[in-house]
Image 1 (cartoon, helix red, strand yellow):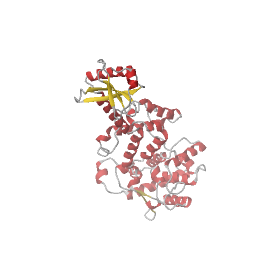
Image 2 (image 1 turned 30 degrees about the vertical axis):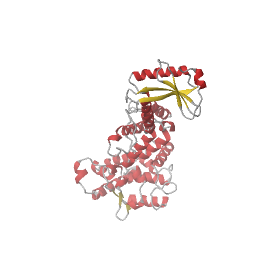
Image 3 (image 1 turned 90 degrees about the horizontal axis):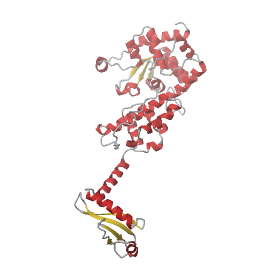
Length: 413
């Protein structure tokens, strides 16, 4: 039987050898002595799972005392008698640990969502990328996605809401929720099956997180004729930004379609602006270009824009000239104008609604206003059969609009 003295006196040999303990209570207990002199307790047993003889180390001597080794041996024997194999259990635990480390993190999940948006050519991909880098802490991004909890999400959203940005808080919430939904379903999508990392998600932790803003009001803002005149004649905007807003209202097109426009899209002889299908908001539904008729009114604006920005590629180049201006550049300009003029707050996209509203008051039909603005028509005939560009009819309507806009500016409305 082992005792402290026999263990201390056990001398190393040229090969590993074992000393057995005769204690029947903890049968199978023994001590290995290595040629280096290192000593460790072990227990040997017959695996109840495989029927093979197994041996596992209980701990090193003297860090583990003989008494502690016997107690550990008894606990191990109880497991074996209950049908468990400690060695196999250890292997399974190591495998789980390895699999756990290979599971995708929250950062991986957000990258997958961004890649999914980019494949669908969604403009929101850049916004999600910005949110990932700005609003999500690095420590959270490095954590396995399946360990992210509701409290973790709240810890991200609460500071955003409390600093006075409740809408942005809800936008961050929506994007993170969509990312988790993608992670839950990626393995059943042909696009990502066997390509996306495994996340081992069981639920979406964002689902039970309440929105900060109970209900977002749909955009209702449209400028009145007096407000249009005030904008038109303001000195609170830089010339490029004022020209961008004027061209935005006079054409009725989307903000980014105007800001990202290239000179190559304009045929001034034919008086038409051809917005490529890949630049349209509806590019996921149609790749058809959008034909915007131009009047002398628009051409004057374009001449002023070219003289002001002096750029060969873009109407409204960003600083450095390698890219067009971003949407927020116009947002900041409008915000400054609102603060200086005292006018009721509005956003650049509200000018599109202003076009729709004021053009309707001039007798232009809703269908023609929709066609002028490039709205996707949802009826089957328009979607799949009608290939006519309606350019002739749109020219009539845009001339009515520009004549009416000129009267508003002159104060003759």
